[in-house]
Length: 525
RNA sequence: GGGCCGUUAGCUCAGUCGGUAGAGCACCUGCCUUUUAAGCAGGAAGUCGCAGGUUCGAAUCCUGCACGGCUCACCA
Image 1: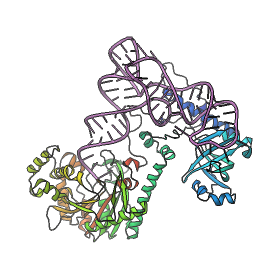
Image 2: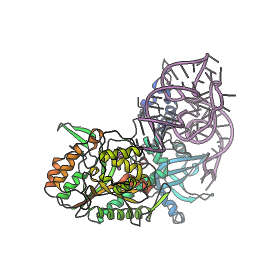
Image 3: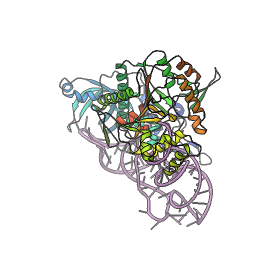
């Protein structure tokens, strides 16, 4: 155990069984399971008792449906007309707050559109119905019919003529004006977070809008949305450690995909020419503000295009997302802002390092490079590859100073096993990584389509050692066979949907755009 | 993985110098027919994250552990 917030262990949900537990009494040793949940259990018992009273008066606490005819927001939007015509309205939602004053009460009900205030009066409802109303408490789901009016303090409300219990809540809601702030509880019991913190819903609606606008943007350009396997016998398309699983009937070791790339390219070879997939990838690596073990990535491939075309496509796509989700091309994130209407800056990976070193980084031998890394204060194990060294230097020297938005280009071939080499500059590939607000939001290249060269790159990956080896591309014979049939020149791009959502929803952590971010299991003992 | 911070009632938080647990909300009882942080009166509710140590005495000091947050390093 050893955590705060709601205890996740379920109480008995059958009323009768829970009731016969009776009042809590400590066991002989004075320490029992139930000890720590005494109060929570007491609150639960009180609510069970209210449920029982409802049932006694012939009310089903969990009916099947309610004829709602409008959302709370509409009452406000169309109030003048509704009031003039004395239009009866029917709303449904969760009761959040109640103010009882003897024979009259006010309550706020929340549905997906917002809140509506309800007004209950004993003389309008009748004594019996008002007694039923007294069994209702914050957290219960209620349907109410009545007539809109304005209170003397000016708040638009509904004078309730009849109501129905739609679901009895057996657990208390979080505190009503500080809300729920404990981040762990917010993530573990996201439903409470959503009920109580309206901004949370807003962030997730923005995320949905981002995805929707990505789809409509690509669909409009004749890209075909496809789905490819998540369970793969070989993992590839990125550098990452995979999750491993097993298929029983086939007695087969399978990996959860780390990228869609190699399957989507097979579809390009198959002649689909323009494809995209929005799906989950899984990487068995650390968790922090910008990383979750499962995350959503857009990958798209376009035949007869190159990485420059991908740049233009991404610029346009982000402009379109911004227009649709924010209504303009200026996007703000963490107090900074970026204008997406302008072309992005470009910075050369290799040249920026060479400038800093005052030597051509591609001409340095491994020892000189290692010396440079040591001089930069970055410490790495002695046996890491040249690619990892270059990556470390770039991360230490250049990345922190990148202005947004920027394309990093001219990556070394060693760290780009699936990208096509530049014909004019050997050792450098046609690749870019887009950076927004210091975050790497994607990766794109002119796809390597020479099967002989691709085999050689896979083989080079095989020489890597240790952790790097595990992260490296595998020699994928089935993919190579496909390539050997001929793949058109192709531009490909991956874009992190979670990170895009962070940016457009202006949320500081990937956990704020994932409903259920990965956490350690509760009660880890 | 490193550093810093946190964990006290269902929720949000106080808790002084080590002296044996507090508030508001929520809940229960009573009053209250236009409230909105409704109000008034009363009540119930705690293994002070877990384990060990120091002490006559630990929420408080020490050590270890768990969980969480922030941050640095690596990955999208």
